[in-house]
Amino acid sequence: MVAETSDIELVELVLLCALVRVYLGMGLFSQKLPKKPAFWPKLGLATLALVLHFALMVAACLVAAPEGPSAGYVFQAVFFSLLQPLLIYGLMYLYDVSVWTASFCATAGYTIQNLASGAMELVSSLAATMGAAPATISFHLVVNFICIPLTYVPCYLLFSRRLEQRGLETVESHGMLAMMPVVCLVIIGFDVLIKCLAADGIAPCYFVALRLLHGLLCVALLWVEYQMLYRTHLEQEQATTERLLAEHDRQLRLSRENVEAINIKCHDLRHQIRSLAQGGAVVSGEALADLAHDISIYDSSVKTGNEALDTILTEKRLLCESRKITLTCVADGGALAFMAAADIYALFGNALDNAIEAVTTLDDQAKRSITLVVRQVMGCASVHVENYCDAAPAFVDGMPQTSKADRASHGFGVRSMRQTAERYGGTFSASADDGTFRLDIMIPLP
Image (cartoon, rainbow, N blue to C red; front, side):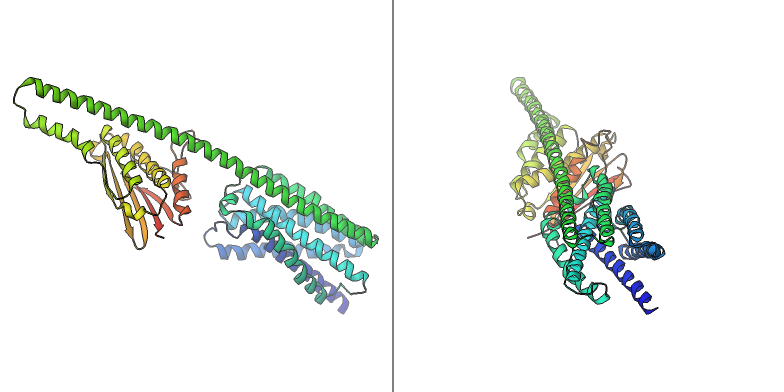
């Protein structure tokens, strides 16, 4: 009876260590992912579900024990295969990620766990050939403490550390789901086959060779997944570059509109001046006021103390003037002195272009206005843009969505602004209520 109790305790310990290795494997890739609200209570529920899953596997293995070790290994293969979709769902339950990102973290993390498990069995087998007693709780704990660091640390250095958070969040490769059957067949299936052969008394040299081959397959699978992720990242980089080129073309088109507006104004001014010079009549005060207003548009360029900000604000001010939009600016350009000129131009260009596009459709002239405030607040550069809108945009994860049908070609400006803010360690937020859209960016001063 004591021996049976000891065997049950050993099985429970083995599966508990397997659960820990699974958590460590997925943690290598999910540690930087955005957590959902109430993360820790949800983690407790997810852990309970996994414990129940492993408890069922223990019960199944104990029921199958009289039929021989092979039957127990078959049950392990089934339960570990079912563990894959459970882990994917658990990651989506805990983190704000897509099914593709969850699939990558689950399959890659589980492969590392299986690599560590294979290494432990290899060490146990070698210890048995040297006369040690591997089927004890203390021996199993020692092997875990040795093999886990030797497996997980290299995997972290070679794979996990080289992955950026954004790279994982934006995974959209459908091939990640195809890795599930690969893991089940190549990693889990091969692992079970090795265990069955070992239970049938395969020669130690063949067992060692098969375990080494299994380890190489695990590493190869990790490398394939990493390459898939890298290729997806390159495709996204190419798409981003294409969008940037499209944005550049749009900026060029807007600049041409500004030049055209200036030419029209200059033509009108020349005509008014020629009429005044040739007419010889008394000039009315109203005509002089109109002339002074037209000239003031070009004479009073924006001066904020930042050349890049002055350039973009002057350009957008001319565009607003041509579209009868009031642009009110209160800007301390010195607050943005640490930012690159290209980032300033892109950030404010996108923000003002979106605001101009929103108010252009308004019929009420009093609402065709935009307010921009740039200042230093509590050690941060604060950017606030406010404008009226006829309909509040839809929001997904705090990000306003484009109302255009072609979402693949539009809405890039908002993402670009958020990425620029986050690149400087800042935050981006947007809101819309009572017909008013507000955009706020806070960037810590260096």
